[in-house]
Length: 355
Image 1 (spheres, rainbow, N blue to C red):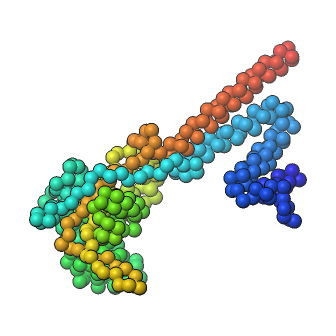
Image 2 (spheres, rainbow, N blue to C red; image 1 turned 120 degrees about the vertical axis):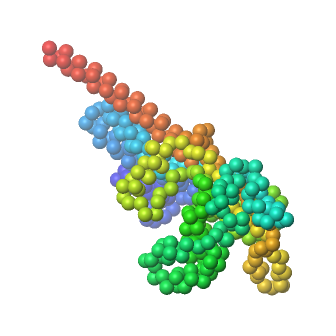
Image 3 (cartoon, rainbow, N blue to C red; image 1 turned 60 degrees about the vertical axis):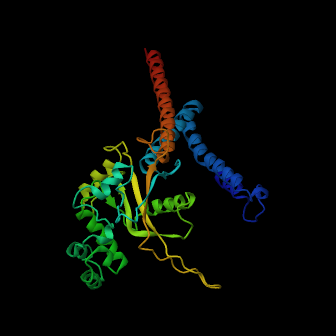
């Protein structure tokens, strides 16, 4: 009955509507606050009531509190590992450099960058990135077809690859992305990795680059087109191999947490080109932006800002649940020690009484 009443109060009334707190139902803060209070009394209070009837009020309070904080301590550990629950601020991408090609110099790429890692993307060796980017890299037809060997459209993939000599010649968008990934692995790009267009990290980086390009006045909104094969990343989290077995996946899981506690500097390069100016006719939707192949290649180099006071160890995302875990762990340890001391004292009293 107590549980039913408290839940009805939190919901703002019973079956007939017009409950006790129905007048403040418009405010989600008060409704949420009342729900938390009601559930806390119903769950924590009922647990204390049951324990206290067997151990007494003081011992029951200590045991119930120790159980509560111990459970929150374990929950905080899970939150910290997976970055879920009560999270802090999510990592962001901050600008390091905007590099613009010299049009008079045939596609210098990032050779004039002031960031050594970025320069290595284009000049790591003679087998490195072509001057015009991954679009000019030779395709590895056999490796690309092998990636689609279980696909229903394998024939279409083989047909698309038979028409291409370079990655940029592949007509199908999905197949072209696979060809770019394979080509990037065949080339010597140092520690850099190609980001597929479907990669969530690329989507975040592209959104940040869009805001930076407009804010810095490099382009107006809609005045450029992202390069189809122009996103690369270095360092960051360990990468799981596509053909990894179950053992490799377990090792990778621990490598992301326990075995690899410190984060290296993580850089991303997002490349765009200017768009061909087009006239929007009255009453019609704006035309699709078309890349101007004669425009200079603009590379936005950004660094991952993990936030938090110790970004190399704890990102801002995980710092909040880590502090939550530490606090609950200390309270749980104090309560458990208090219970241990009480048990020792009661044991001595019983021993003295029986002597």
